[in-house]
Image (cartoon, rainbow, N blue to C red; front, side):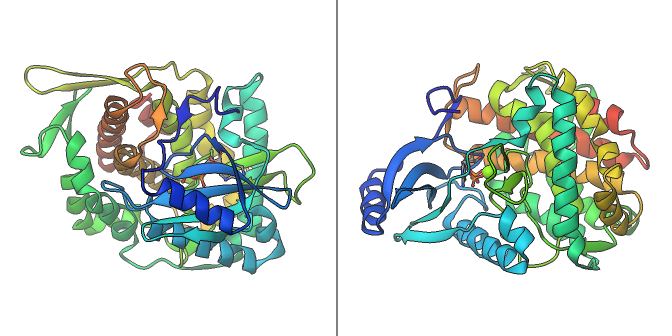
Amino acid sequence: MSVAESPVRASPLPDGVRSEVFAALRRAGLETGPALPPGGSNARIFALTRDGEALVAKIVVDEPGLVDGHDVAALREKVAHTRRLRATSDALAALFLETSVVARGERWMAVAMPRCDGRPLIDLVDGPDASRAFERELTYVLDVLATHGYGISRVPAPGDVVVTDHVERVLRRRKLLAAVTPDAGRDRVEINGRMCTLPQRLLPAIAGNTRTMRRLAPAQLHFPVHGDANLRNFLLHSDACGRFRFHVLDPRGARRHRDLVYDLAKMLFSLTVLEAGLVHGFDIESSSAGALEVRPRWRQGSRAEIAAAFPSLVERTPAMARVVAETGSGWRRRLLFAHAVHLVAEAACRLSDRAERTMPMGGGASGRRNVAAGFYLLGTLLLNDVVADEDPDVAEHLALAV
Ligand SMILES: Nc1ncnc2c1ncn2[C@@H]1O[C@H](COP(=O)(O)OP(=O)(O)O)[C@@H](O)[C@H]1O
Ligand SMILES: [Mg+2]
């Protein structure tokens, strides 16, 4: 998609950094081309060329109000993670593009990688004959990731993995989340007719409940393939440029084995509200008594069915079914729990993002706040539902949000 057609445009590099970045790229022998549409973070993406080779630059600047994960330290970890993945096997080297730091300043860093002329996997969801083409490609991606990634090694999960992966992640983002927390003075709020406990209160409470923690914890952790596996980070290419039909962008920087269900939940989140929420936003109304009504401003259509069928699709992909079974029983419940936490945690990312998005309520601060509040409130609703239910039905549970 060209920048002109894209509904999202990166915010300009801050004054004082811009000229420094471009001069440093020039000194490194890189010719800077046009800005490309950004992903989900505040990183600025530019086309680059070096000796005629098409590259992409990802530039991250430490700015006030960034969430953990959008800063220079996180980009450094992502580069190191990519290097480890590529050194692990030829198969992973074929999936992850070589990424290197090409310039850096006091509060910014630029990395370069080959430009992949591909189509984000998520875009297939809305195409003609959407569900069949999408499911075929997703099955292929899951099979490759399980065979050459997750499945290559595993370790027993430490007892505190739910706390480190989920509880601490939300608590770490407390300050940013305060901007969309309805009434910080109260622990409970009514959302779409249900009384819910706020995540900042609910998550520490379940961390202290041994029985709940046991039901939410994986038995095994797997080789850390990604950590931010939203379906925009998978680029399908039609040319013969690789051993596989796709490349993977933007691994999160994991150093140790991880819960692979966390990644699967991020894929599911792409299908439920992440992608559509960023474009359309939410209708949010508050009654005089403080009860909230939150509705997506889009018609979910075939995506709702695709999302509800996601766990079955995982189970029908033999290599992935095998590694998921290694994580222990009750994986669907763990998937829904991680998915709900992703909504809440992502609210902080929306407040950190400064990209201009074409949205019905305006693409600037009001749009950002709307999406963040929508994710936070629906995440709260889903989290309360999954924690209360021993054996939630996937379609019924997800229907609470879409
Ligand atoms: N090597 C690449 N080739 C082509 N497009 C890329 C490449 N790297 C990034 N992009 C584009 O830039 C977007 C953002 O890059 P990404 O590394 O995923 O950053 P973010 O953390 O902001 O999501 C991607 O969704 C993709 O559209
Ligand atoms: Mg991305």
